[in-house]
Length: 251
Ligand code: NAP
Image 1 (spheres, rainbow, N blue to C red):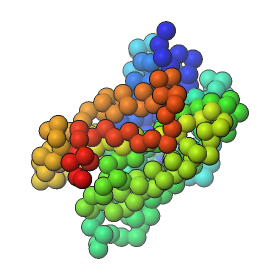
Image 2 (image 1 turned 180 degrees about the vertical axis):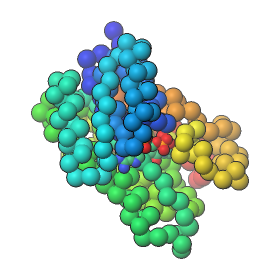
Image 3 (image 1 turned 60 degrees about the vertical axis):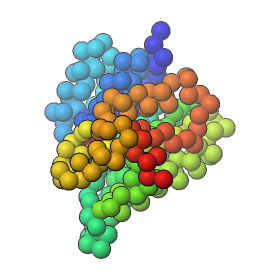
Image 4 (image 1 turned 135 degrees about the vertical axis):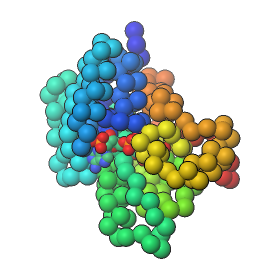
């Protein structure tokens, strides 16, 4: 039997990049998966078809993670469709990079709204059914930028550091209800988000990574699948760094 058989998972931002790889991996582990997206319906539909093509079940959910009722609606739709909710991955995120001195307030606020408030709302929505079930796994996607900072990413790093504080507090609040909450902190991973990095930043990044290359989305998806699996039953409030050694090299 696969390790996630009969489990139901939600992956926010599952239409592309890391979220797509996580959705495919959780499905390969036996979970039914709901994929959320904001704009790119066609890409989300392709992920749904890939999952169905490998014999899995997938549900598509549209909306902005940071709108008040979106995540709650998603959770209700998932429970209605699949009968339960076991795993919730808060993965959706954006970047609006700029040096702090030049950063516009709207770029500060938009990144905090989506990358931190969106995670807060996702956690709240996931908790309702999980607490009723007395079991659940919440996995929040931060970044090494949230641990060690990054030039030009003051807004992004603040939001990603906020995810760490939020998750560790949540882990303490809900452990007695059978719910775990953990963070995965990727380094540089090959996705649309890093495809637009200036060449100099990319080359400097590669040079700074002890393993000498950007990671693949599938390598982050394995960390998520582990934290969602029975093997991680005794792990909560943890930060699992998946960065080829990048943050270790920063200290
Ligand atoms: P990506 O390729 O840009 O994909 C972002 C995903 O988030 C898309 O599915 C997008 O939906 C969704 N999304 C964005 N804003 C949203 C909103 N307001 N409401 C709902 N969905 C929204 O990003 P990625 O590289 O896979 O990154 C995924 C996560 O990993 C992010 O939290 C990112 O910060 C984090 N991370 C990435 C890296 C990296 O190197 N790539 C490193 C560390 C951390 P649409 O497709 O509909 O636009």
